[in-house]
Image 1 (tube, rainbow, N blue to C red):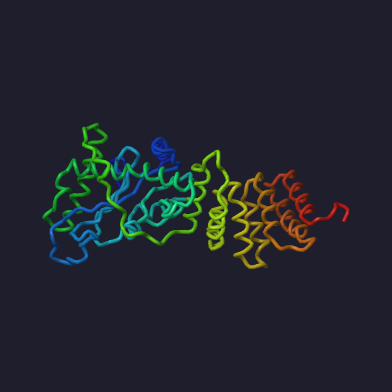
Image 2 (cartoon, rainbow, N blue to C red):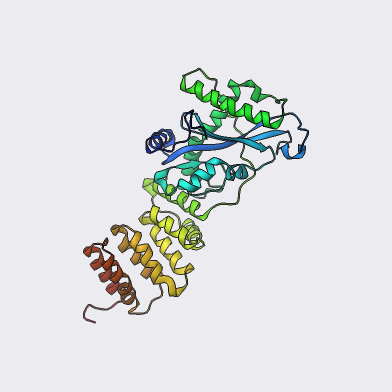
Length: 358
């Protein structure tokens, strides 16, 4: 991290400014930093020579950095040999540990990375095979927004030409040189020094694809896609994609599922409730449903319970019994309004296909 020279956004004010800056690029929400890696060429080292040979078959240091919307670097990790995968560099970085510890939801901001990185709730990557228009819109906005870090690397290497050639020093000194160049670059940006931008086709392809995606990360990506990148004139998602989304939720463990529900909206609730019904043992359904309902806003409780009844294979009076088990403790805890509780009871009666007298 670079706390003295326009470091990573850790305060609400700093995060708000970063989110606004990234959002102005292509409408991508909640982004506070873009992450990428680049290789700095070095002479053949005398020790562990094979570890420094990268996928393009030259010796290098694999440098990971993040930047804000202006191309000002906010973190750097320049200690790994060229053969190291980008995902491993990220997992060992201070940036990773900071996000793992301090990220609790979209309000804390997210990072954008290419397909070499794992998709996590705080690190969103592009879809590998966008099957519908909304996914392609997400990928397009993701690419345009994340491009700031690639441009930052291009400006950095043109500003300091030593980074364009083979540096004839030991790897440790090369790492220190890289950090110094990043700090000087940030100062030049803050002082308004002129800079030379790289051509658009000077971007590096992503490293070997990463397959260590986090299911809750995929759920956050789905949520942002459907919330921000669906075509307003074509809001219906095709059936095949919905089936895939439901399958994704089915294999999420319960704690991850709760996280998804707390950040999701109405269009995702049916798939969350189907997942609960299918992946949690029958005897635990009621207690888990209570835990979910207690954490949802009132306006979603009715929709969620309706989806649950439809997904459940309950007998005639099953919805009434389930509703009684859920409504009684909800009434005692306090936050749920009387109107919502009455609506839930009416829903249970309708789902039981019986009249009020019976």
